Length: 310
Image 1 (cartoon, rainbow, N blue to C red):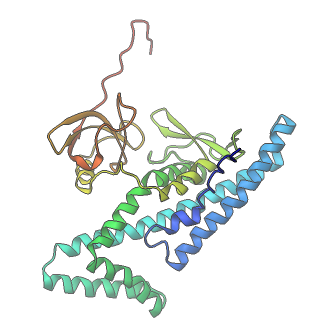
Image 2 (cartoon, one colour; image 1 turned 30 degrees about the vertical axis):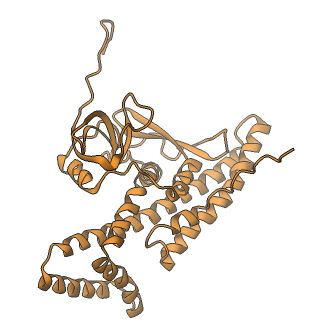
Image 3 (cartoon, rainbow, N blue to C red; image 1 turned 180 degrees about the horizontal axis):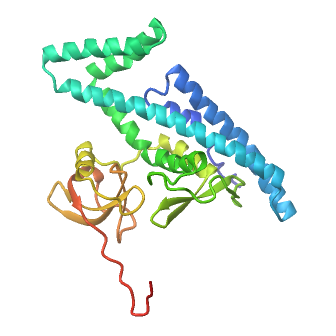
């Protein structure tokens, strides 16, 4: 009898993150390694917490408080790593785009100005040389800039999920809601599937989501996978320029126009970056790369029956 196939080993967070450009830099790489090491440590504690919970039939308070505390620290570390990396990528891409619009004389002046600015910001000459290398590469390799832009897009959903949890846990505020207070910030429950701590996160406008630490970690591991739902850069710019009010947290409903003129309504776009879903469809009925334009497609008003009361 043939032995059943063994499941492939789970991707390490460190391995997934190190495949992103710039994250092979030594100090960012150390942060990625730290996030990965604590994730593995927490998985063991989460499994132990779940076992205690099942045996007791109630929450083992001391173990739950300990796992909850470490889980919050892990969220903060994962958030700061992604925030720092995304900020660097944004700076390089924006500068590169500006550079390409200049003539030869303007380009040389811009290169010299940026080189001097990098040197001023660096604590040591060697550090300045290392940090300048990525700007120099971006100035000479358009493909590298495209790689950076795509990588940042790939992290959008994972980052936004971690950002929302971090906002509630660290600042006790609703994410992106102008300082609105979060309810019961820091209170978590035990996920009965794997023992990780899960948090109920308010997103504003009576919208609520639930994230567990293990779910957030899976989002980081998934960065290794190619995402064909990312919108073309020109379409992303078009959506940002429309200044739409989000119908839901991070989401807008649009009509997309394909390269053959076909229009598809009811398309939900997340963070002006990724196609989330198309109403009435299980998958995507088109290739996202074929989208050439978008326009707003507001949801229809909610119909109330005659007995509805306010």
